[in-house]
Image (cartoon, rainbow, N blue to C red; front, side):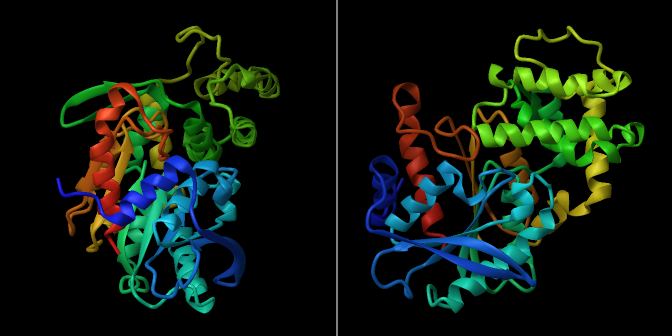
Length: 368
């Protein structure tokens, strides 16, 4: 394993001890006639000759202000790289609209060039969570292909049905090996809010979908883990507002934290519902399945995923890798992550994974 670059060591120092010599700017981008704000975090001093990265946030209420995202971009800037984090207002509203990735990235590149904060050398793209596969796929967009030199995904998915299956059941697999982990309910709240009424058997479940959107929005604003008892009163209140014949359906997605598994009458199996939601998502927006677009990405790609990711399981990193048939992406799965964000400096057993993680970050920072 080669020694890490000075850039990587500066990144690690900034992640642990805080940013060093960074400047933050707010600019407004033109996304096809829509003004969207963006945050630029850059090294102090001359920037035109610095490499640049576009960083795409996930489906989250804080958007570009997410604490871990801010920490990540500050560490990247401390390493001597300019970053821009464009807002995707629709994603902050918890709407799953994958096709906004490419126009947002295009606007970010143009915004950096117009502001004199980058040169026309190819830039890197980083995607987090839901945004990861679509950020990577943007490298195959004919209008962006020559402008993107590499891509990185943190905590992304490769197959929509297997991801939904995990969100509903906690089960996932790769290579014939079965795994199970308690799923973060936030994921299924978001999925149902967007696609439940597109499932033919649940076309009338608007009250369930609306209730789950409210719950997900509250969780995003609150910031506590989605299985925390703090949400129990709201779950009870929302359930009471739903038509009685659909309360069992609501229970499949949201239950108070003290409700034992199997204590409610499920209307259908989690696997059946996951399959229906996957079909519905493709009918609403075929682009939610990234597989075909990923096959045309030729630029270098790095994938990082948390082994204990409760929202999107780590096996999705391998599905992403398998979908990238025109390049040779590297994959790092580590206990140093939760969901698409690095935790505090590790101690105990996870400490032994630090060299592997540092090597992965080194590969990422060398992409452009």
